[in-house]
Length: 65
Image 1 (cartoon, rainbow, N blue to C red):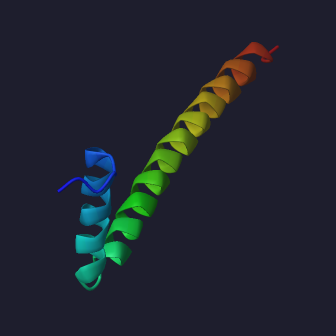
Image 2: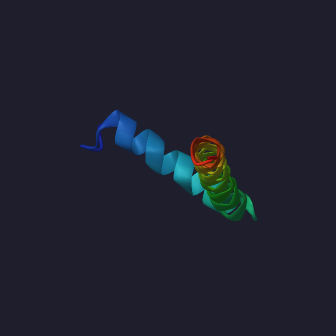
């Protein structure tokens, strides 16, 4: 039966409906997404901290008279 809807769009809708039907699935998905974002932010902050630490060591060594 042709519903006049793109097959991929229909597949996405069915997937979303199935997830919504399972209790806690939407919450788990949201938590997983947030966890991924937070882990990326931690990596970014760790890199920034390492750069600042190296810069501080460099400039501290440069100013010794």
